[in-house]
Picture: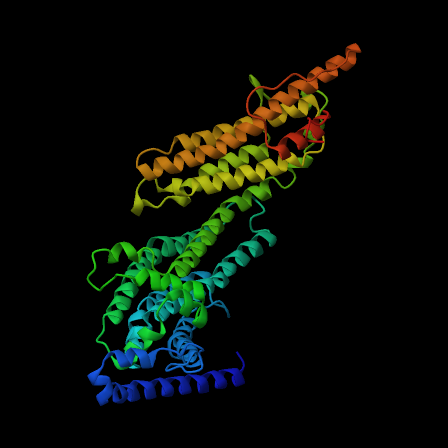
Length: 478
């Protein structure tokens, strides 16, 4: 916002406050005149707009200015002053501490905003107030994107500088990201639910405040939310309708107040949830990034085009996985102590397993799909690699037992093993067809692919493996 725009906004805010004060002071004189006292129905008639809209006791333009500059703008100014710092040389960990402190300050502001509106005599604009609180908090939580980007850029920078070139996780950065997630998920989200209840209590209290001439005029003006919400539209017609609907039938002591609080501030709740999800994804990327480094040359390994079993790594009873693959397993098991959160229970590391295993399985799958050629021996080596990873993911999933939350996370982690098994099953079937195709070619016989039982592999997996193995595309994959 430029200085000129700020000056104009300040001028409009001053005018809106002054005009509202004139209505607050002037309407009682009109309401107390003899005709109004003798016939109370006259007041409602006087406050209604004329049929053609040419006469309005409270002009829509005035209400718009009041909504923007008396209610919403002060909230925005307060909230934007508390946006997490991201500029300068501040460390991510320091930024987290400041951000948490500022977020707590934000959640204490609704009482100040309510008191300000009450002091200005606008309590009956409570639906507008409630919608503006939601819009303001939504904008505030969206500003946390910059803080998340700071961590994201730090991760990218360290990866590009080669600090993860040996495949080791950046324990310091991972710990900072987990602290940010814990602060948002375990503390701020819980406190924000209490804040939503407080906001709803403040709104119902204002709604039940003593009747005033201005309040009666506003009630007449704002009859029928379908009409006035579209006409005022600050912060938006949809937000006004939602706030108006939420307040219907509620009082400060209503038994349903706590339940209804879970529906309050829907936009800001969603925005906060998005930030929590972004940070969770950031923790996952911290854990998966070393795997990307480990497997950087995996698709070009010479084992894929090996022509004899002497060209691959032997193991009693079969083949051993490639060193880069065993490094993935070692990395996963080494991660567990870093992901533990003892203060929340001995199985809390599984909170992260589903997303981390999903990320690792996706990374491995993408590397597999980038292999351009697979000989029969190369296919057997790939099967050995995937079998090893499948056992590792299964072991991590089956180790998740105890609390219901741990069991649920373990079940979700098992999904990653299932997806890896799906690719492994497709590879095993197609590798067998490759061998049969070569045997038929050596005998001069026509090759007919055997039907496959079970669930087909995902389209992209099937197509890439067939191309690498030299098999004709399946029907519908060409």
